[in-house]
Image 1 (cartoon, one colour):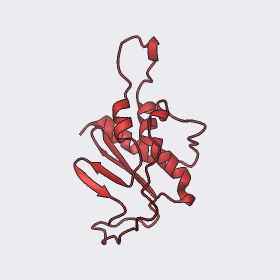
Image 2 (cartoon, helix red, strand yellow):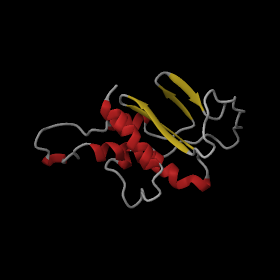
Image 3 (cartoon, helix red, strand yellow):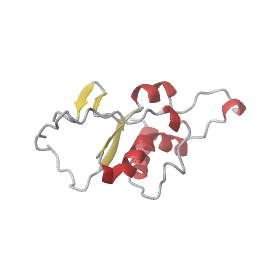
Image 4 (cartoon, rainbow, N blue to C red):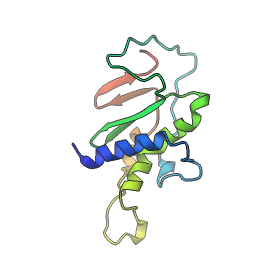
Length: 143
């Protein structure tokens, strides 16, 4: 396991649950590269979930998990939880920004890429109801 990844996922969880973080006032760099949430048509019904194999606290509204450089978020997408949805969209990116030296753009003394991959942000950065994570197809409406 990559220690930076684990610290980053832990920090992302803390940021997602931090009511004091206003994503409009303090967005992370590259925030505009993350697509907006992709929601399914409201006419698609929700399926019935099977009982969980592990206990899940009833107050859980969001969580970040990951493996190496693949992070994923699950968040309750409801009007009452809209601020957490905004934080869930940006928390992984903000965690990387806080943990690593910020990129200096054209003033960077040693040529290097941003710590966050813009290609990955565009391809995998959106919150969505159907998602493939580490080869697993997750459809949050169907189960």
